Amino acid sequence: MGNIKGFLTIEQQQPKRRVIGKRIDDWKEVYQKPGNESVVKQAARCMDCSVPFCHSGCPLGNIIPEWNDLVYKNQWKEAYDRLSRTNNFPEFTGTLCPAPCEPACVLAINDKPVTIKQIELAIIDKAFEKGWVVPVLPKKRTGKKVAIIGSGPAGLAAAQQLNRLGHTVVVFEKSDRIGGLIRYGIPEFKMEKRRLDRRLRIMKREGITFITNCDAGSSITTAQLEKEFDAVVLAIGSTSPRDLKIQGRELQGIHFAMDYLTVQNRICEGDRVAKKDMISAKGKNVVIIGGGDTGSDCLGTALRQKAQTVTQLQHRSMPSGIRTIKNPWPEWPQTFSISSSQEEGGKREFSIVSQEFIGKDNKVTAIKAVRANRTKDAAGKRVIEIISGSEFEIPADLVLIAIGYTGPQTNGIVKDFGLEFAPNGALLTDERKMTSKDGVFAAGDAARGQSLIVWAIAEGRQVADHVDAYLMNQSFSSVAVSAAA
Image 1 (cartoon, rainbow, N blue to C red):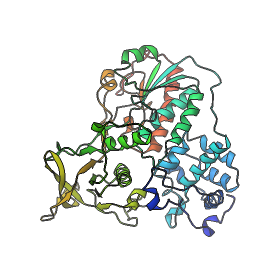
Image 2: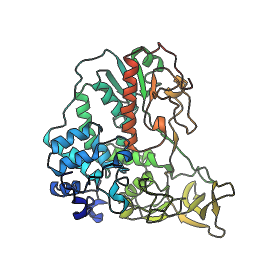
Image 3: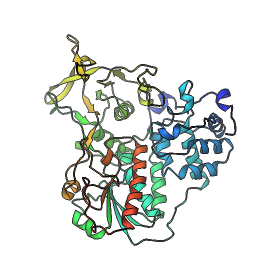
Image 4: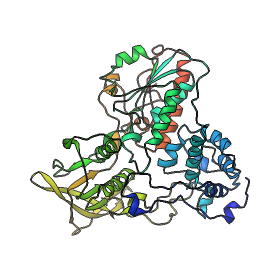
Protein backbone atom coordinates (compact mmCIF):
# COMPACT_ATOMS: atom_id res chain seq x y z
CA MET A 1 0.00 0.00 0.00
CA GLY A 2 1.10 3.57 -0.66
CA ASN A 3 0.90 4.70 2.96
CA ILE A 4 1.73 1.73 5.14
CA LYS A 5 1.27 3.76 8.33
CA GLY A 6 -1.94 5.52 7.31
CA PHE A 7 -4.07 3.42 9.61
CA LEU A 8 -1.87 4.47 12.55
CA THR A 9 -1.86 8.21 11.88
CA ILE A 10 -5.25 8.93 10.29
CA GLU A 11 -8.51 8.67 12.23
CA GLN A 12 -11.63 7.22 10.69
CA GLN A 13 -14.04 9.86 9.46
CA GLN A 14 -17.49 8.74 8.34
CA PRO A 15 -19.29 10.81 5.69
CA LYS A 16 -21.16 13.69 7.28
CA ARG A 17 -24.93 13.67 7.51
CA ARG A 18 -26.88 16.81 6.73
CA VAL A 19 -28.30 18.75 9.69
CA ILE A 20 -31.38 16.94 11.01
CA GLY A 21 -33.56 20.05 11.17
CA LYS A 22 -33.01 20.68 7.46
CA ARG A 23 -32.99 17.18 6.04
CA ILE A 24 -36.35 16.14 7.50
CA ASP A 25 -37.90 19.03 5.56
CA ASP A 26 -36.99 17.56 2.19
CA TRP A 27 -36.38 14.23 0.43
CA LYS A 28 -32.77 14.77 -0.60
CA GLU A 29 -30.07 12.28 0.37
CA VAL A 30 -29.03 12.37 4.01
CA TYR A 31 -25.28 12.25 3.41
CA GLN A 32 -23.18 15.16 2.22
CA LYS A 33 -20.71 14.62 -0.58
CA PRO A 34 -17.19 14.41 0.89
CA GLY A 35 -14.30 16.28 -0.68
CA ASN A 36 -11.60 14.44 -2.63
CA GLU A 37 -8.95 15.18 -0.01
CA SER A 38 -11.05 13.62 2.74
CA VAL A 39 -11.71 10.46 0.69
CA VAL A 40 -8.03 10.12 -0.24
CA LYS A 41 -7.07 10.29 3.45
CA GLN A 42 -9.62 7.63 4.35
CA ALA A 43 -8.32 5.40 1.56
CA ALA A 44 -4.84 5.77 3.06
CA ARG A 45 -6.08 3.94 6.18
CA CYS A 46 -6.30 0.70 4.19
CA MET A 47 -3.40 -1.27 5.61
CA ASP A 48 -1.15 -3.89 4.06
CA CYS A 49 -2.98 -6.59 6.01
CA SER A 50 -1.67 -9.55 3.99
CA VAL A 51 -5.03 -11.35 4.13
CA PRO A 52 -7.81 -8.84 3.25
CA PHE A 53 -10.84 -10.17 5.10
CA CYS A 54 -12.94 -7.40 3.53
CA HIS A 55 -13.05 -9.68 0.46
CA SER A 56 -14.84 -12.35 2.44
CA GLY A 57 -17.26 -9.78 3.81
CA CYS A 58 -18.28 -8.67 0.32
CA PRO A 59 -20.58 -11.03 -1.64
CA LEU A 60 -19.37 -9.40 -4.87
CA GLY A 61 -15.73 -10.13 -4.10
CA ASN A 62 -14.77 -6.50 -4.67
CA ILE A 63 -11.00 -6.07 -4.81
CA ILE A 64 -11.18 -3.42 -2.13
CA PRO A 65 -7.51 -2.90 -1.13
CA GLU A 66 -6.52 -2.34 -4.77
CA TRP A 67 -8.99 0.45 -5.48
CA ASN A 68 -8.34 1.96 -2.05
CA ASP A 69 -4.66 2.21 -2.94
CA LEU A 70 -5.45 3.71 -6.34
CA VAL A 71 -7.64 6.38 -4.74
CA TYR A 72 -4.86 7.16 -2.26
CA LYS A 73 -2.56 7.68 -5.26
CA ASN A 74 -5.21 9.88 -6.95
CA GLN A 75 -5.52 7.37 -9.78
CA TRP A 76 -9.32 7.62 -9.86
CA LYS A 77 -9.84 6.30 -13.39
CA GLU A 78 -7.86 3.17 -12.59
CA ALA A 79 -9.79 2.82 -9.32
CA TYR A 80 -13.08 2.95 -11.25
CA ASP A 81 -11.83 0.35 -13.73
CA ARG A 82 -10.92 -1.98 -10.86
CA LEU A 83 -14.23 -1.42 -9.03
CA SER A 84 -16.39 -1.93 -12.12
CA ARG A 85 -14.83 -5.32 -12.79
CA THR A 86 -16.76 -6.83 -9.91
CA ASN A 87 -19.67 -4.45 -9.28
CA ASN A 88 -22.16 -3.39 -11.94
CA PHE A 89 -23.76 -0.72 -9.78
CA PRO A 90 -21.40 0.85 -7.20
CA GLU A 91 -23.79 3.79 -6.89
CA PHE A 92 -26.44 1.40 -5.50
CA THR A 93 -24.18 -0.38 -3.04
CA GLY A 94 -22.39 2.88 -2.18
CA THR A 95 -25.66 4.31 -0.91
CA LEU A 96 -27.81 1.32 0.12
CA CYS A 97 -25.54 -1.54 1.14
CA PRO A 98 -24.97 -1.94 4.92
CA ALA A 99 -21.33 -2.64 4.00
CA PRO A 100 -20.57 -6.07 5.51
CA CYS A 101 -17.03 -5.52 4.19
CA GLU A 102 -16.36 -2.87 6.83
CA PRO A 103 -16.79 -4.92 10.04
CA ALA A 104 -14.72 -7.62 8.26
CA CYS A 105 -11.84 -5.14 7.81
CA VAL A 106 -8.77 -6.22 9.78
CA LEU A 107 -8.68 -2.81 11.44
CA ALA A 108 -12.07 -3.62 13.01
CA ILE A 109 -10.39 -6.11 15.35
CA ASN A 110 -9.34 -3.29 17.67
CA ASP A 111 -10.01 -0.04 15.81
CA LYS A 112 -12.52 1.61 13.50
CA PRO A 113 -12.51 0.04 10.02
CA VAL A 114 -11.76 1.66 6.68
CA THR A 115 -14.79 3.57 5.34
CA ILE A 116 -15.01 1.34 2.28
CA LYS A 117 -18.57 2.28 1.35
CA GLN A 118 -17.75 6.01 1.33
CA ILE A 119 -14.74 5.45 -0.92
CA GLU A 120 -16.74 3.24 -3.29
CA LEU A 121 -19.42 5.89 -3.74
CA ALA A 122 -16.81 8.60 -4.28
CA ILE A 123 -15.21 6.51 -7.05
CA ILE A 124 -18.43 5.99 -9.00
CA ASP A 125 -19.57 9.59 -8.53
CA LYS A 126 -16.29 10.83 -9.97
CA ALA A 127 -16.52 8.29 -12.80
CA PHE A 128 -19.91 9.66 -13.86
CA GLU A 129 -18.71 13.25 -13.48
CA LYS A 130 -15.67 12.58 -15.68
CA GLY A 131 -17.62 10.63 -18.31
CA TRP A 132 -15.81 7.37 -17.67
CA VAL A 133 -19.05 5.39 -17.32
CA VAL A 134 -19.94 4.56 -20.90
CA PRO A 135 -22.01 1.83 -22.57
CA VAL A 136 -20.18 -1.49 -22.94
CA LEU A 137 -21.34 -3.14 -26.14
CA PRO A 138 -20.81 -6.81 -27.00
CA LYS A 139 -18.36 -7.59 -29.78
CA LYS A 140 -20.95 -9.79 -31.45
CA ARG A 141 -24.44 -11.14 -30.86
CA THR A 142 -25.02 -14.82 -30.20
CA GLY A 143 -28.53 -15.00 -31.59
CA LYS A 144 -29.88 -16.12 -28.22
CA LYS A 145 -32.67 -14.26 -26.42
CA VAL A 146 -33.14 -14.02 -22.66
CA ALA A 147 -36.15 -12.72 -20.78
CA ILE A 148 -35.48 -11.13 -17.38
CA ILE A 149 -38.58 -10.95 -15.20
CA GLY A 150 -38.15 -8.18 -12.67
CA SER A 151 -36.01 -5.04 -12.79
CA GLY A 152 -34.61 -4.85 -9.27
CA PRO A 153 -30.86 -5.07 -8.62
CA ALA A 154 -30.63 -8.81 -9.40
CA GLY A 155 -32.56 -8.48 -12.65
CA LEU A 156 -30.57 -5.43 -13.76
CA ALA A 157 -27.23 -7.09 -12.98
CA ALA A 158 -28.22 -10.25 -14.85
CA ALA A 159 -29.45 -8.19 -17.79
CA GLN A 160 -26.26 -6.18 -18.08
CA GLN A 161 -23.97 -9.20 -17.81
CA LEU A 162 -25.94 -11.27 -20.33
CA ASN A 163 -26.12 -8.37 -22.76
CA ARG A 164 -22.37 -7.87 -22.56
CA LEU A 165 -21.94 -11.57 -23.33
CA GLY A 166 -23.77 -10.98 -26.59
CA HIS A 167 -27.24 -12.27 -25.82
CA THR A 168 -30.32 -10.22 -26.66
CA VAL A 169 -31.95 -9.24 -23.39
CA VAL A 170 -35.48 -8.04 -22.67
CA VAL A 171 -36.40 -6.96 -19.13
CA PHE A 172 -40.06 -7.18 -18.15
CA GLU A 173 -41.32 -5.08 -15.24
CA LYS A 174 -44.88 -5.25 -13.89
CA SER A 175 -44.77 -1.68 -12.57
CA ASP A 176 -44.88 1.51 -14.62
CA ARG A 177 -41.20 2.29 -14.07
CA ILE A 178 -37.98 0.28 -14.09
CA GLY A 179 -36.12 -0.32 -10.84
CA GLY A 180 -38.16 -2.69 -8.71
CA LEU A 181 -37.38 -2.31 -5.02
CA ILE A 182 -34.81 0.40 -5.73
CA ARG A 183 -37.47 2.51 -7.44
CA TYR A 184 -40.46 2.14 -5.15
CA GLY A 185 -39.17 0.52 -1.95
CA ILE A 186 -36.17 2.70 -1.11
CA PRO A 187 -36.89 6.25 0.12
CA GLU A 188 -35.45 9.13 -1.84
CA PHE A 189 -33.49 10.30 1.21
CA LYS A 190 -31.46 7.06 1.13
CA MET A 191 -30.80 7.14 -2.62
CA GLU A 192 -32.10 9.77 -4.98
CA LYS A 193 -33.59 8.13 -8.06
CA ARG A 194 -31.43 10.27 -10.33
CA ARG A 195 -28.73 7.68 -9.65
CA LEU A 196 -30.98 4.87 -10.91
CA ASP A 197 -32.18 6.84 -13.95
CA ARG A 198 -28.60 7.73 -14.88
CA ARG A 199 -27.63 4.05 -14.84
CA LEU A 200 -30.71 2.99 -16.82
CA ARG A 201 -29.81 5.45 -19.59
CA ILE A 202 -26.45 3.69 -19.91
CA MET A 203 -28.06 0.24 -20.01
CA LYS A 204 -30.52 1.27 -22.72
CA ARG A 205 -27.63 2.52 -24.84
CA GLU A 206 -26.00 -0.86 -24.35
CA GLY A 207 -28.91 -2.41 -26.21
CA ILE A 208 -31.06 -3.78 -23.37
CA THR A 209 -34.81 -3.54 -23.95
CA PHE A 210 -37.08 -2.60 -21.05
CA ILE A 211 -40.82 -3.24 -21.07
CA THR A 212 -42.93 -1.81 -18.24
CA ASN A 213 -46.53 -2.44 -17.17
CA CYS A 214 -46.04 -6.06 -18.13
CA ASP A 215 -47.00 -8.65 -15.52
CA ALA A 216 -45.35 -11.90 -16.61
CA GLY A 217 -47.89 -14.69 -16.50
CA SER A 218 -50.76 -12.47 -17.62
CA SER A 219 -49.55 -9.63 -19.88
CA ILE A 220 -47.13 -12.13 -21.39
CA THR A 221 -47.82 -15.81 -20.84
CA THR A 222 -45.37 -18.54 -19.96
CA ALA A 223 -46.14 -20.13 -23.32
CA GLN A 224 -45.09 -16.92 -25.08
CA LEU A 225 -41.91 -16.71 -23.02
CA GLU A 226 -40.95 -20.28 -23.90
CA LYS A 227 -41.67 -19.65 -27.58
CA GLU A 228 -39.89 -16.32 -27.92
CA PHE A 229 -36.92 -16.77 -25.58
CA ASP A 230 -34.13 -19.28 -25.14
CA ALA A 231 -34.00 -18.79 -21.36
CA VAL A 232 -35.89 -16.96 -18.64
CA VAL A 233 -34.46 -15.44 -15.45
CA LEU A 234 -36.87 -14.80 -12.58
CA ALA A 235 -35.67 -11.87 -10.49
CA ILE A 236 -39.05 -11.17 -8.95
CA GLY A 237 -37.87 -10.55 -5.41
CA SER A 238 -39.31 -11.71 -2.12
CA THR A 239 -42.44 -9.60 -2.09
CA SER A 240 -44.98 -11.55 -0.03
CA PRO A 241 -45.05 -9.61 3.26
CA ARG A 242 -45.11 -11.42 6.58
CA ASP A 243 -48.35 -10.48 8.32
CA LEU A 244 -49.16 -9.94 11.99
CA LYS A 245 -52.40 -11.85 12.47
CA ILE A 246 -53.62 -10.63 15.81
CA GLN A 247 -57.03 -9.42 16.92
CA GLY A 248 -58.09 -6.21 15.19
CA ARG A 249 -55.96 -6.76 12.08
CA GLU A 250 -58.94 -5.86 9.86
CA LEU A 251 -59.10 -2.29 11.19
CA GLN A 252 -58.44 0.59 8.81
CA GLY A 253 -55.12 2.36 9.17
CA ILE A 254 -52.98 -0.81 9.32
CA HIS A 255 -50.71 -1.25 6.30
CA PHE A 256 -47.73 -3.22 5.13
CA ALA A 257 -44.57 -1.11 5.11
CA MET A 258 -43.90 -1.49 1.39
CA ASP A 259 -47.38 -0.22 0.47
CA TYR A 260 -46.69 2.87 2.55
CA LEU A 261 -43.21 3.48 1.14
CA THR A 262 -44.39 2.99 -2.45
CA VAL A 263 -46.99 5.76 -2.13
CA GLN A 264 -44.40 8.30 -1.00
CA ASN A 265 -41.92 7.22 -3.66
CA ARG A 266 -44.58 7.76 -6.31
CA ILE A 267 -45.19 11.25 -4.96
CA CYS A 268 -41.44 11.94 -5.13
CA GLU A 269 -41.55 10.78 -8.76
CA GLY A 270 -44.19 13.44 -9.43
CA ASP A 271 -47.22 11.14 -9.57
CA ARG A 272 -50.64 12.19 -8.32
CA VAL A 273 -51.91 9.57 -5.89
CA ALA A 274 -55.66 9.02 -5.67
CA LYS A 275 -57.24 9.77 -2.30
CA LYS A 276 -58.28 6.15 -1.82
CA ASP A 277 -54.66 5.02 -2.28
CA MET A 278 -53.05 7.70 -0.12
CA ILE A 279 -51.24 6.60 3.04
CA SER A 280 -49.82 9.53 4.99
CA ALA A 281 -48.44 9.95 8.49
CA LYS A 282 -49.14 13.69 8.66
CA GLY A 283 -50.44 14.64 12.09
CA LYS A 284 -50.84 11.01 13.16
CA ASN A 285 -49.55 8.80 15.93
CA VAL A 286 -47.54 6.26 13.97
CA VAL A 287 -46.42 2.86 15.22
CA ILE A 288 -43.94 0.83 13.19
CA ILE A 289 -43.77 -2.87 14.00
CA GLY A 290 -40.33 -4.11 13.02
CA GLY A 291 -36.83 -2.91 13.81
CA GLY A 292 -35.00 -3.61 10.54
CA ASP A 293 -34.01 -1.44 7.59
CA THR A 294 -37.55 -1.30 6.20
CA GLY A 295 -38.90 -0.18 9.56
CA SER A 296 -36.20 2.49 9.71
CA ASP A 297 -37.18 3.66 6.20
CA CYS A 298 -40.77 4.00 7.40
CA LEU A 299 -39.56 6.03 10.38
CA GLY A 300 -37.64 8.50 8.23
CA THR A 301 -40.59 8.79 5.86
CA ALA A 302 -43.10 9.40 8.69
CA LEU A 303 -40.91 12.13 10.17
CA ARG A 304 -40.70 13.89 6.81
CA GLN A 305 -44.46 13.65 6.47
CA LYS A 306 -44.71 15.45 9.84
CA ALA A 307 -46.20 12.70 11.98
CA GLN A 308 -47.26 13.75 15.46
CA THR A 309 -45.44 10.84 17.12
CA VAL A 310 -43.53 7.83 15.80
CA THR A 311 -42.78 4.70 17.79
CA GLN A 312 -40.81 1.76 16.45
CA LEU A 313 -41.42 -1.60 18.14
CA GLN A 314 -38.97 -4.48 18.03
CA HIS A 315 -39.49 -7.92 19.55
CA ARG A 316 -35.75 -8.48 19.99
CA SER A 317 -33.97 -7.29 23.10
CA MET A 318 -31.75 -4.23 22.91
CA PRO A 319 -28.31 -5.31 21.66
CA SER A 320 -25.10 -4.62 23.51
CA GLY A 321 -22.91 -1.75 22.43
CA ILE A 322 -19.90 -4.06 22.00
CA ARG A 323 -19.28 -7.47 20.48
CA THR A 324 -19.75 -10.47 22.71
CA ILE A 325 -17.58 -13.56 22.76
CA LYS A 326 -20.32 -15.31 20.76
CA ASN A 327 -20.10 -12.67 18.02
CA PRO A 328 -16.38 -12.41 17.17
CA TRP A 329 -14.69 -10.55 14.32
CA PRO A 330 -15.05 -10.84 11.31
CA GLU A 331 -18.73 -11.78 11.73
CA TRP A 332 -21.36 -9.10 11.24
CA PRO A 333 -21.54 -7.30 14.62
CA GLN A 334 -24.83 -7.89 16.42
CA THR A 335 -24.43 -4.62 18.29
CA PHE A 336 -26.60 -1.60 18.97
CA SER A 337 -26.70 0.86 16.10
CA ILE A 338 -28.61 3.97 15.12
CA SER A 339 -29.67 4.51 11.52
CA SER A 340 -29.88 8.00 10.03
CA SER A 341 -33.68 7.85 10.38
CA GLN A 342 -33.52 6.76 14.02
CA GLU A 343 -31.14 9.64 14.65
CA GLU A 344 -33.78 12.05 13.38
CA GLY A 345 -36.39 11.33 16.01
CA GLY A 346 -39.10 8.97 17.14
CA LYS A 347 -39.02 6.43 19.96
CA ARG A 348 -37.63 2.89 19.88
CA GLU A 349 -38.99 0.13 22.10
CA PHE A 350 -37.24 -3.24 22.45
CA SER A 351 -38.51 -6.61 23.71
CA ILE A 352 -42.10 -5.79 22.77
CA VAL A 353 -44.81 -8.22 21.66
CA SER A 354 -47.89 -6.70 19.98
CA GLN A 355 -51.00 -8.51 21.17
CA GLU A 356 -54.01 -6.65 19.80
CA PHE A 357 -55.03 -3.74 17.57
CA ILE A 358 -57.64 -1.56 19.28
CA GLY A 359 -60.05 0.53 17.24
CA LYS A 360 -63.09 2.75 17.10
CA ASP A 361 -65.51 3.17 14.19
CA ASN A 362 -63.52 0.50 12.32
CA LYS A 363 -60.30 2.57 12.52
CA VAL A 364 -57.22 1.67 14.54
CA THR A 365 -56.64 3.89 17.58
CA ALA A 366 -54.06 2.01 19.64
CA ILE A 367 -51.95 -1.12 20.01
CA LYS A 368 -52.08 -3.32 23.07
CA ALA A 369 -48.59 -4.64 23.74
CA VAL A 370 -46.59 -6.42 26.42
CA ARG A 371 -42.95 -6.58 27.37
CA ALA A 372 -41.13 -9.88 27.04
CA ASN A 373 -37.82 -11.64 27.49
CA ARG A 374 -36.17 -13.84 24.87
CA THR A 375 -34.93 -17.02 26.54
CA LYS A 376 -34.20 -20.63 25.67
CA ASP A 377 -36.18 -23.66 26.71
CA ALA A 378 -34.74 -26.96 27.98
CA ALA A 379 -34.05 -28.08 24.42
CA GLY A 380 -32.11 -24.90 23.65
CA LYS A 381 -34.84 -23.47 21.43
CA ARG A 382 -35.41 -19.72 21.62
CA VAL A 383 -38.73 -18.76 23.16
CA ILE A 384 -40.43 -15.51 24.11
CA GLU A 385 -41.37 -15.21 27.76
CA ILE A 386 -44.11 -12.67 28.48
CA ILE A 387 -43.49 -10.45 31.54
CA SER A 388 -46.59 -10.62 33.69
CA GLY A 389 -48.22 -7.27 34.44
CA SER A 390 -46.27 -5.38 31.77
CA GLU A 391 -49.19 -4.77 29.41
CA PHE A 392 -49.56 -1.26 28.01
CA GLU A 393 -51.22 0.60 25.14
CA ILE A 394 -49.68 2.86 22.51
CA PRO A 395 -51.83 5.42 20.66
CA ALA A 396 -51.83 4.59 16.95
CA ASP A 397 -53.67 6.21 14.03
CA LEU A 398 -51.35 4.57 11.51
CA VAL A 399 -49.68 1.18 11.95
CA LEU A 400 -46.96 -0.03 9.57
CA ILE A 401 -46.02 -3.71 9.57
CA ALA A 402 -42.36 -4.19 8.67
CA ILE A 403 -41.50 -7.70 9.86
CA GLY A 404 -40.05 -9.15 6.69
CA TYR A 405 -41.16 -11.30 3.78
CA THR A 406 -42.06 -14.94 3.32
CA GLY A 407 -40.90 -15.33 -0.28
CA PRO A 408 -41.86 -14.46 -3.87
CA GLN A 409 -45.45 -14.22 -5.03
CA THR A 410 -46.73 -17.76 -5.63
CA ASN A 411 -49.31 -16.96 -8.29
CA GLY A 412 -48.84 -15.78 -11.87
CA ILE A 413 -45.68 -16.89 -13.60
CA VAL A 414 -44.46 -19.00 -10.67
CA LYS A 415 -47.68 -20.99 -10.60
CA ASP A 416 -47.92 -21.23 -14.40
CA PHE A 417 -44.40 -22.63 -14.67
CA GLY A 418 -45.22 -25.06 -11.85
CA LEU A 419 -42.08 -24.16 -9.93
CA GLU A 420 -41.02 -25.84 -6.69
CA PHE A 421 -40.14 -24.05 -3.46
CA ALA A 422 -37.31 -24.37 -0.96
CA PRO A 423 -38.05 -24.77 2.78
CA ASN A 424 -37.49 -21.03 3.37
CA GLY A 425 -40.21 -20.11 0.86
CA ALA A 426 -37.80 -19.09 -1.92
CA LEU A 427 -37.79 -20.69 -5.35
CA LEU A 428 -35.95 -24.00 -5.40
CA THR A 429 -32.85 -23.87 -7.61
CA ASP A 430 -29.96 -26.20 -8.31
CA GLU A 431 -26.25 -25.42 -8.41
CA ARG A 432 -26.75 -23.66 -11.75
CA LYS A 433 -29.47 -21.44 -10.31
CA MET A 434 -31.98 -23.23 -12.51
CA THR A 435 -35.43 -23.79 -11.09
CA SER A 436 -37.42 -27.02 -11.34
CA LYS A 437 -38.37 -25.87 -14.87
CA ASP A 438 -35.72 -26.43 -17.52
CA GLY A 439 -34.42 -23.16 -18.94
CA VAL A 440 -35.97 -21.06 -16.18
CA PHE A 441 -33.46 -19.61 -13.73
CA ALA A 442 -33.90 -17.56 -10.56
CA ALA A 443 -31.72 -15.02 -8.78
CA GLY A 444 -31.77 -12.50 -5.96
CA ASP A 445 -34.31 -12.57 -3.14
CA ALA A 446 -36.58 -14.86 -5.18
CA ALA A 447 -33.91 -17.56 -5.02
CA ARG A 448 -32.21 -16.97 -1.67
CA GLY A 449 -34.88 -15.27 0.41
CA GLN A 450 -34.93 -11.73 1.73
CA SER A 451 -31.37 -10.41 1.71
CA LEU A 452 -29.06 -7.47 0.98
CA ILE A 453 -28.79 -5.46 -2.22
CA VAL A 454 -25.15 -6.54 -2.57
CA TRP A 455 -26.27 -10.19 -2.58
CA ALA A 456 -28.88 -9.38 -5.23
CA ILE A 457 -26.25 -7.90 -7.55
CA ALA A 458 -23.92 -10.82 -6.88
CA GLU A 459 -26.71 -13.29 -7.63
CA GLY A 460 -27.54 -11.46 -10.86
CA ARG A 461 -23.95 -11.75 -12.01
CA GLN A 462 -23.77 -15.41 -11.05
CA VAL A 463 -27.00 -16.40 -12.78
CA ALA A 464 -25.81 -14.65 -15.94
CA ASP A 465 -22.77 -16.94 -16.04
CA HIS A 466 -24.97 -20.03 -15.65
CA VAL A 467 -27.45 -18.86 -18.28
CA ASP A 468 -24.60 -18.16 -20.70
CA ALA A 469 -23.15 -21.63 -20.19
CA TYR A 470 -26.60 -23.13 -20.72
CA LEU A 471 -27.32 -21.15 -23.87
CA MET A 472 -24.03 -21.84 -25.55
CA ASN A 473 -24.41 -25.60 -25.10
CA GLN A 474 -28.09 -26.45 -25.59
CA SER A 475 -31.47 -25.07 -26.60
CA PHE A 476 -34.34 -24.15 -24.27
CA SER A 477 -35.91 -27.61 -24.02
CA SER A 478 -33.18 -29.99 -25.14
CA VAL A 479 -32.48 -31.40 -21.69
CA ALA A 480 -34.98 -32.17 -18.94
CA VAL A 481 -33.37 -31.01 -15.73
CA SER A 482 -35.07 -30.86 -12.37
CA ALA A 483 -33.79 -29.24 -9.21
CA ALA A 484 -33.93 -32.63 -7.52
CA ALA A 485 -31.75 -34.32 -10.13
